[in-house]
Length: 207
Image (cartoon, rainbow, N blue to C red):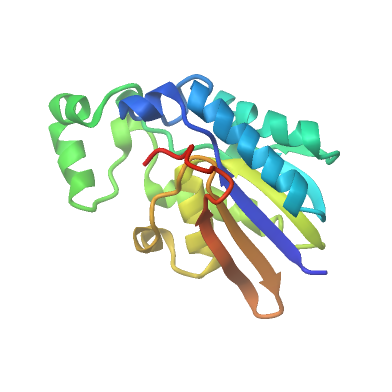
């Protein structure tokens, strides 16, 4: 049995719904986010029969998403801060319009496809490096590891697995709340089996 990694973005938060940058801040899940997390947990309990571990970011919205999964699956949990979302510094809690007002140069650079240090926080290259290292540690062994994380790390993990580099995230669509992306490790390296599956949501998803 080969190693599989299922990357799961957290459920919706209030800041998601309001269009606010989160980074390392923000609270737990909205009512919709809690319903999404419950639906994801029910799906995984039915479909994932070879799960050997759950790895998650240490942020509150991810902990709340992982909780119903762990309640259904008797697997060990490991918290790894490398799976955090990108640190957006002073942009956190602000809408796009507010960021454009308080940091016009940095925001314009980001809109143009650059990689600024968002609000004094991280760059995408830095996020890519820590996520790629965390993913590499999951290579060995067999069975499925669930990784409950954030939208940015999902895209960077897939880009790293496919050898696309940090800029390769632009070739991947946005990760939906509780969307599932599945990687499988074989002799030739990682294969992408599915990206951002949301069939468990039954109309709960919000674009």
